[in-house]
Image 1 (cartoon, rainbow, N blue to C red):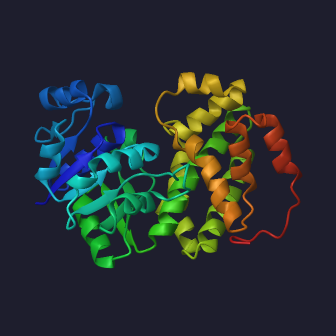
Image 2: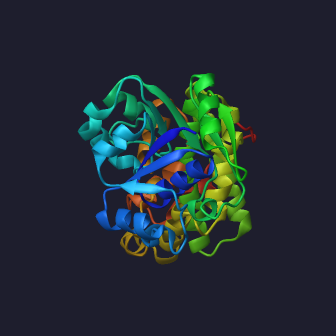
Amino acid sequence: MSKVTVFGAGAWGSTMAQVLNDAGNDVLLWGRSESVIAEINNSQTNVKYLGNHILPDDLIATTNLDDAFAFSDVYVLAIPAQQIRETLVSWKSRFSSTCTIVSTLKGIEISTQFRMTEVIEDVLGPHKMAIITGPNLADELVLRQPAGAVAASVDQGLADQIRELFRTPYYRVYTSTDVMGCELAGAIKSVIALAVGLSIGMGYGENTQAMLITRGLNEVARLCAAHGSDPLSAAGLAGMGDLVASCGSPLSRNRTFGEVIGRTGSMSQARKEMVKTVEGVASSSAVVEIAHRVGVEVPVIEAVADIVSEKLSPADALQRLMEITTKAENFIR
């Protein structure tokens, strides 16, 4: 049994805490909300984020940061991507040089275009660090439905350790040393899922969705290759797997948000209907900047960025996509 602290008591943090608990670990879940933490400890529910689902009896939660950091030296981060820098700056002195940090965050920091592990290292300096990513919708994973994920670290030994930390009979974890590729794929899939949601909201069917998913995956692969990571990461669980789950499920926040925009043509209406974090909205412009920096054309991602910044209507953006000159289809062309 290992001791693990999970930071973030929303839907994803609570789900990760359950997975880790089911894997035989001693888990402490930290959150900011006194009422959410009290509910988890008293009734083993987190109604705000997980409905009436019952969490494990021996899962404990706290709002006390001193207790959270003292509990273990393995820290799993499940905090919204755009809040992570500010949060880590305020916690910096609490991280020991020997701790292990596992990021479950998917996104690109808007101000710097950094991946999440780059943000963590920029604030805290070098640490033993890994990520866990893949096609994992919290509402399904918390029900213990079979799912797969990737534990990635530049250190294969650490990736192996994280695989064992999370592995349960229903959660199949593979390993990778391509942290950059896995993070880029995980961030960009949110933007592609927005594009698919937009098409659904506009009344288009499977043909349109298939085009956006396939060409979106091509953009993911070319961005990975341009940064020196393995383009095949885009074809694995971190890329294609996550893309299929996010684009195909009505549980996906990004797809759902896109559907509202496509249906109403209104960003403000989408924000009213979807109050939870929608990472594709925040990351789209940052991903475009990353692509321009390495000279990669990303028309699907650019279309989404222009829609969420209200420079183009969904109809105009789709028309622009359809007018782009086609070339030979090639996975990383």
